[in-house]
Length: 328
Image (tube, rainbow, N blue to C red):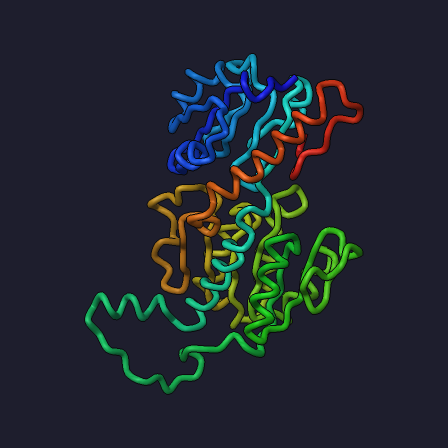
């Protein structure tokens, strides 16, 4: 049973986000504290009824949380949480899916524009104080997004926002989703995931906005790269493990595809030894697609909605009250 507002204790756990500062401005009267490291979270978790967390969570922490009844994830991904264990312990879990959908979609567009307008090269030339001349070779010249076909793998909230932006640039959007019968969600056409290999040869851009599931892990592999146009570009704002990273490096090095824009990698932070750092036609951003000055407030809006649902639902409601973005 979740304690009432006057007896509830919230714990915000994140290395960088200013969740407690933003929460204090709401004057809710709810007791709360913030930790910024795993060790501090482990030391103080026993005080918390509700935990707001993502990357600092490890499932062994559950043994340090006798009062814990609800976790609001700060991120859309929840693969770090053991759902069976939460069910067994009676702990509810909700994701933050959708709170940064617009930001991630805009970031995917930014990566596409950076590659098509050769901004990587321009920044390097600026550092060298080098003014590049006009390019006669059409294959090396800047390009336009308009008239291109983009294949979007994952047509949820992010895919929907992205499709709206891509179509505004005059692109044709071909979407893939787990349940195509649920509608195109902004794409010009929609297909099941088993159509990927037949759709890849049509795409000038392949944009990954899907969740990491057993079905999508390693989805973009050597065979997928072999099916893509040599001029195609890959954009990944989903999860690193959706892509076979050694196959990606091989494809970019060998000219099997033209370029890649990556906000996510298999191992994060990206190891210093990774070849991705030094490939001139790869742009890497540090899993920052969802970063926005409004992120904390978006998460807190979701948290307060879910707390209200838990309070109004009662302890013994059958079936239990449905949370926004409910996982458990």
